[in-house]
Length: 186
Image 1 (cartoon, rainbow, N blue to C red):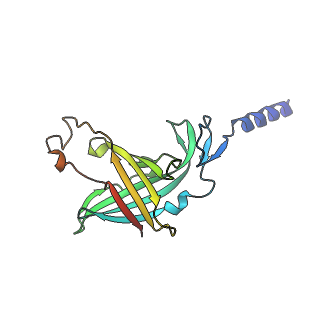
Image 2: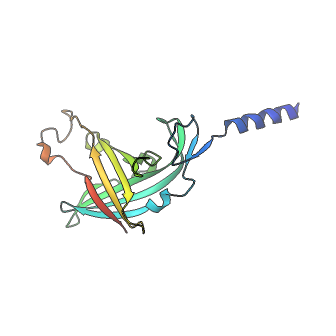
Image 3: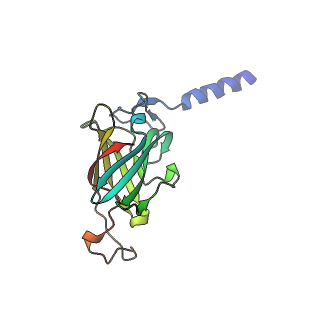
């Protein structure tokens, strides 16, 4: 009887193991699979990066999270998350979310590179700025991997009357992220 339970337990355990796929898998993967950074590509992005735009300085820190379950994909993925701090040129902090837990980062990787242009995509959702959202794409611009092209495209953002900048003119809306910038590894 013990042997039967042992065989059943082993069978269930083996059948429940998630199938592993590399990040550069460009087909659908089954539920509960694992999109894994098998080639350790995400590690090159980890660390703090700096850029300057419109008299502001942005510091972006990328970190790799492994084997994270993503509800929308119903699968496990290795992803990058990013936290940022923006200051003006005199050092006054304008935006800072570096103290958030990694799982609550406002910038989260999708989990796989884009096939068409080899860029790594992120989603950005900022509840503190009236649900501002968008897509960020990053890629290296040099072979030494010390320069990073950052492209941010903001989604259409409908501002509700309870938003703190509802009465602002559009040009006065808070701008926490640059649209296009080259970041340098620190």
